[in-house]
Length: 433
Image (cartoon, rainbow, N blue to C red; front, side):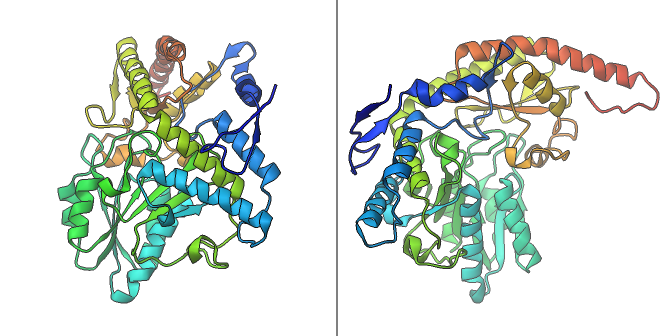
């Protein structure tokens, strides 16, 4: 049964909110985890996370009770504005920022576009038409860079080493006198490696270059402080840490030269036009508050599960390897290669057995192209196509990990046998199954 209670700092200062029980909120999601008697396990938290029950309750209450336009000066508008600003404070606390430096967006992709295009266009009149990034960025960054390249900007893409880490020295060598921006992700979405953002930012800023980091895969998983990273712009997205989809933010260091890319009204201090998504932003704020309180606990638990998963798979399945192993990584992510098997076939086989996994970024799913991240790391063509990304989360259990490990030997043996049979047929497709 629903209970009514005041949750200051989480549900807000506006008053009592009705909070349904976790079981009621998660009921439908739990139902989806059982299909024809088979329990399903979710190992794709880097694609998205289930929305936390407290977030759902806060979003629902805001949609019901705080329907005003946050730009309106009357009572209803000011109530909505108060909730929006409380969420801004909660999010700022998570990343060590000033609330006034945060601009709410529709998600990580918009924030990346805002950062890159905004800086490029602001500094273009000064003749600074060179941009530097890495070859392992999310498509939101890479595609935006390609779009600017077509308009005349020069773009340099720096490769990582074989472990998936880009060095500050390599990025420094890519800088030019007319470089406007360095865009470097904090955590890679496929292999989980953490990039040396602070070291790279120090080099770039000493040369007068602005620095943007896409921290979509790190915020809520590891401690993130914008002052320690020493960047000028930082992107984050709510649905990666148990918040709602369709809402994110761009942190902009005070004084950074940036042109607005979304024009219209004067919302977000004239930096991002459009009526604010108050319920979504409230959900983002609650998710940020919960992440801050659970960061250490979640990180420790997920590190244990990830390590058990890695060690179990390597021991149970022959000819497997971990991509990015030995480097600092987010605690929930592993990327494992399975020799002789096409990752897409393995993904489908595991899904049929009740395990949701990924071959890489969900934003690039459906493509037959090899992983651009693994390719940039210097892996062979086959090794760029045989890797699975497994990402655990707040609700992953040891039993689910053990069941996945137990299921893999028979599945991989079957797929490798299929590959061997294909290879024995003259003229047959020799690709792994």
